[in-house]
Image (cartoon, rainbow, N blue to C red; front, side, top):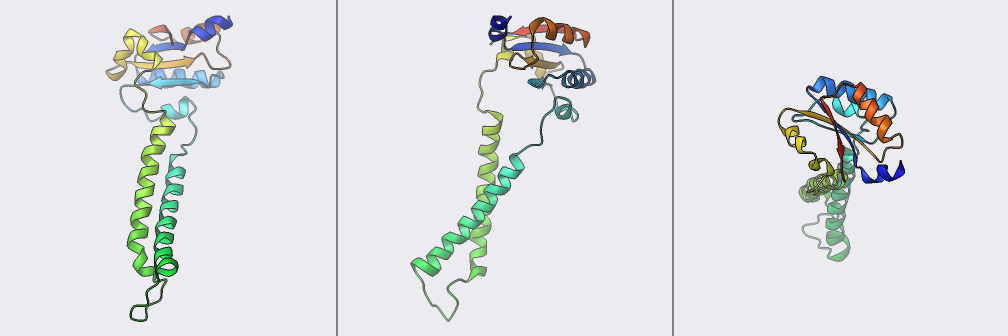
Length: 180
């Protein structure tokens, strides 16, 4: 049993409509499956909750990156104007923070944007030119009009026979074994 579990990426069930996929995803989550993914030709609003996705961490990462950029931009100017090369021009204070606002703002936006882009790549595991579900010939229809639910073999509850029977009870069009 363990040997087959390692040889298989998972089981892929094909559904005709997004409602069927949502219903199947909810049942799979309630049954205790946690390592699963759904593939659709268009965004389905209820699907992330149905497959049990957690609250995204990317907004928090972007906030941290933006704050870091803003602080770094301000401190860079403060260091240059007050510590490294102080100039007293017309009696203005060395720490003239209103003049630091444009650069501080730009650094905030720059760091926030870079954190968003690189954080999205890292959290999504991109770039990923190959995925095991591409081995299933009918998976090319996932970008047209077919919906798929894949329960991965890494799931603690995954046993090929039991999982296949569970998926059959959900009444999919077809079930495929996904080779790694």
